[in-house]
Length: 254
Image (cartoon, rainbow, N blue to C red; front, side, top):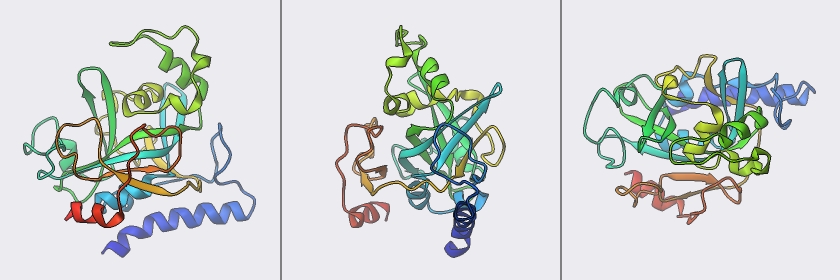
């Protein structure tokens, strides 16, 4: 069963690699769309959440709105799994707000955090098994200047920045609230099918460095679960980077 679920990702990656080998593009160009990019299939998301979290690193999150395309390489994520996870929105059981978590995998779960920031998650696992992966940080690719301008705008709890060009690329999408602001992701994107054309994840054949796991941050409960994964050494990753052994992560999952 797990082998079948992995097939979609392997096929997408083989397609990109084959096109790159033929000189048709496929992955390392920055700041432009890549013709060889492959949108992820439903089977990618219909797997154990920690596997999805790990495999999202190095893939590209894309958002198209009002004719503007923004995108970035995913470099930091967090997993939230089931009603037994006190930090997961499913902990109290099904509600109107957390309905997407119980839905079909491969959909977006976007919610407002502390009344200020929208946060974007991808729904994972089988229909009825509430789980998702929070996208925490990106390495910007397409639409960098647009993202800078959005980050520079005034918003609740934040003053406008007079000169958006002073924002270094690695800070544009560092942190889940900054990420959605830069990408233009709002509550209107909640429940979107990630197989559509507005918000989705694609494979561009981009290779990233070593992956580390550690405690989730920005929460008050469930911090003992080492379910945050990131690309080691990447400047867009949150400052707290204390890694744990893989065996500890698997023990916490059980």
